[in-house]
Length: 279
Image (cartoon, rainbow, N blue to C red; front, side, top):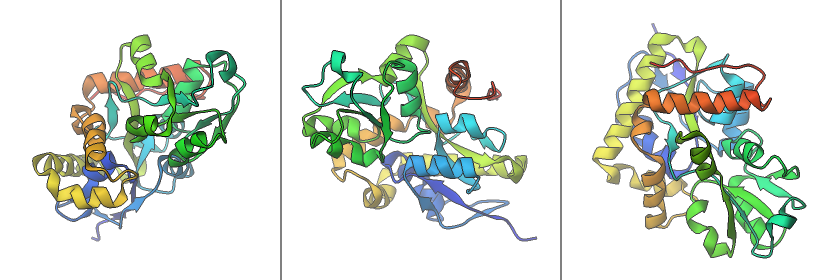
């Protein structure tokens, strides 16, 4: 019997390429499935593909997850979740809190966690526009927009664009809920079946453990796809977004995800009140 070849997608950001390198380069043996060549795309593209059901296995924002839980199961490994790592609302220096409500605020995708956090933290900001995450700071720098929500490596480099911090949306979440901020996770089609999903989780965890043991193995792959190629920025990015929750969400991580989903339902962002079972 032929093993199914699973389509897999994740972002080109250092945390994802660090996690998946050993798996997609064939260093991790898989049982019960094989992988088609990886597809790297920005997080909002992956979110839209998840909603369309395009990939078997995919990285996606937890905002997008709330819309696809009937079709996809959240894996316990590979997630980006933690403290001090949330999206930032930044603006040009001459923008004040009094004028911000009149500004158009860029968000890095309709289904990103960043967009959902902005809506929950600042419901008064109604004027938003969607931009790809790596286009927001350049647009801010030349005055195309007045403010924007930035993610990924941008939290380390926004000062270089002469921008000011308005709200640390991750810090707002942590202070409001007490939970770490759930940014994104890995999900698999429920139709793959429990056995394949279990083996897939194990393979991704082994891939991350391999990266932890020998980071240099993935360095060329990570740098090839990174937005910022400075080694220090890449190292900070991985150090911030890849942690114990990435190995296993655990009870604390799942509680954070469930609180995020619950608040999304309460805010009428999700149509159903779905929760992730505690393992």
